[in-house]
Image (cartoon, rainbow, N blue to C red; front, top):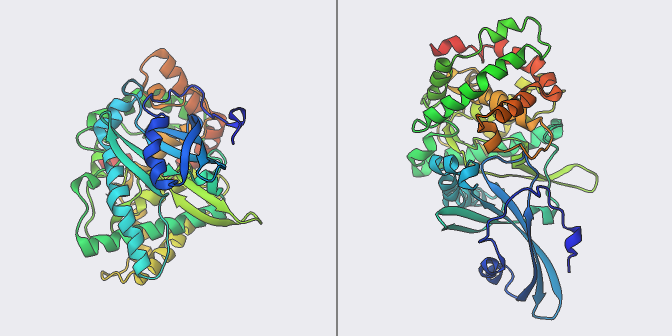
Amino acid sequence: MSDNNSIVNPNKSLEIPKWINQEYFEAVLKKDEPNYVKIVNFTPVAAIPPGENFTSVMLRIHLDLVINDGTTKHKTYVVKTMLAEDRGGKQVKEVGIFDKELHMYQTYLPQFEAIYKEAGEEIQLAPKCLQTEERDDGIHFIFEDLGELQFQNVDRIKGLDMEHMKTVLYKLAEFHAVAAVYVERNGPFPKEFDEGFMTRKYQDFQDSAFKLKRESFVKAMAAWGMDNPEVYTENFPTADQFSKMCLRNLDIDSQSFNTLTHGDLWSSNLLFKYQPDGSIDQMIMLDYQLCKYGSPALDLLFIITISAANDIRIKEFDNFVRIYWERLIECLQLLKYQKPLTTLRELQKSIYHENNTFYPFFAIFNHLPVIQFPSDEQSNLHSLKDESEEGNKFRWRLFTNPAYAAIMKDLYPFLANRGIFQFKDFE
């Protein structure tokens, strides 16, 4: 039996929904632990620290069970549910990302894994989802706790070293390949998968968020230590250019290789399991709320920009694309993809296509400042969107954080000098 004093709560300020109680889990236990007799301890805590997730409430449920043979068993589950409406949940609900994730776990991810199984490969793309439900005007998920199986995140501030990046790029290629084969066999995904972070319906929301942060971001750029910072501050996108950049991302180049992208690929949405010698044994991707049909360049630009370790992000930039491409071709051939296979040259070109600019820009403007910021109770969607003076102070802390500045000093010029941040293309 567990000792409640030994249970760690990494975010004590998180308010746990009242409906998450002992009675609610009895239905799950009847399917997952059919030999249990009763629950003797029920302890819900936060599953992750502040700053690890901004669109969901993530909980770890600790249960002590009496089994029918008289023994006791400690069991944990992970619950993913929606934010309170006054903490950013209203916007998240309106965008519909939980509805999309419901489709992924109920329909597409099981079929993707079945396609690999038919081809003779056991490839797990996501954690086992034990229950999906719509209740209290919201959507909720209960997952197996991969922490019990020794899966863990990498430190988001340190980022992913070469071994971790190779593992992620292989898994990403496996996901992209099977999604492309699924479309070939079954036809296109529903229209909601044409949009990801960016949606036409909520363009105004993105525009207002950009305007809220733009001034302090540009001001902070001058303090990062870049040579000739005015070259970059003077060419930083206007509100109109940003808006057009967002909309351009929704245009799909039908002549290029397209697939279902993960859409939010960064270190906290990746779990790793290790061998006794420290080498990586398995990896699983999490959080399928923002999947978007389009170029694989979207995911490649996002993961490299946000989560590659500082010493390899720029140095291995092109090599990362090659590593991914080699595994992609292997998987497409394994699954007997019928269309022409994309070449490395074509894939590298897509990295620079203006349709894909939004993702690396959004990565450095919206995600990377928070990812490089130590866990803090203010690290939440509400604080990021807060229009008060307190909100301004928090965003200034993010943009001038020395760890973030050290990355941006080299990364921003690198992306700009390659033409990826050529914002005049959006006039």
